[in-house]
Length: 216
Length: 216
Figure 1 (cartoon, rainbow over the protein chains, first blue to last red):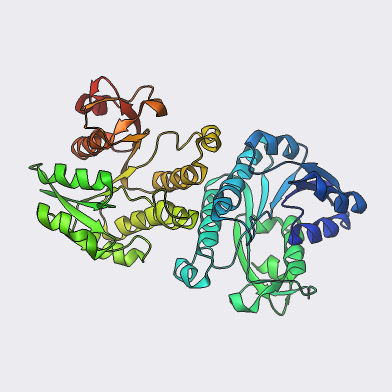
Figure 2 (cartoon, chains in turn blue, cyan):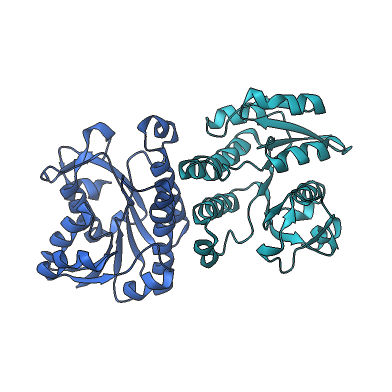
């Protein structure tokens, strides 16, 4: 049974992922939450949870991470905060999480990034340039580490039910992908070791995600 | 005669540096300006200048850089803009300049960074955390390149006249250093090849900057 620390567990993807991992025989979710008020969802689900902030110290994160076997980073500052949070959460918070992983010797690290995070030419027109910059450099740093990383890059996130089917060949941002399928891809990445060292861009599509990932 | 592109030439350090390099026999400044309105200072000084933005494309920067032999990055979004500019200017603008250098095969790259840019524990209390994050990751990326970089990390910047004397051993942020001496250190770094590959933190002090740098 592998204990998977979900950083950003109270986000939409984080909650779906917590539920999915709870149903998996080989994995056990461990939720990292920013505020004590966020605990009830996880208590009701019977998911272990801890309160810590990626805006705090690396040690604070490491303290929780050290009892786990893998990390999923799905935290995000969101659209309603200032760009200072884009820097402290999406960029430095992500890198602090990597540093905590190095400190605690947790090798497996799954990063939820964003489609086009390496395509600077598309950033300005998206209206989300600061966010893309933060995600791009967080991914850049991750690639320089010796962590067993997988970088997942979904397109526009949808609240629709998952289809279990994705497209990793030519995902266009406009096609989008449900948050449930993103959570499904994370579970598959945890299962499939050959996703290590890969950057997987995807959207909804016609290939079952188990198969799509093994082809990635 | 080496042509030195100053990115952020219209800033306080950039202007002093333009003047200093104009007086050097071995160097010729080339100013990169964001706005045509900024040209008169450089025209009066007889300094070649070009208008381009580091918020534009890498190609736009490369077009100007290709006729030069070294780059000094001293641009900054400053204290009166939003943190989106911290991301687009201080971080991504800096990295675009590195990419332009790679593209044009200009190897020598001097980065004006900030004291404590690697000391995360000091950032939050400084009130400048987003700025430090941007500078930290710009420096991080620079260190992964094969450019002949020197990273200069002055403490608190002062508008006082330069003393020509600095301290690179235990610079405390509070001591500060005049912008004129920062410009002087940049000139020395351009002259002293053994500053390549080094990170030099400094403040005002008691060692002549020529000597301090050769000991760095």
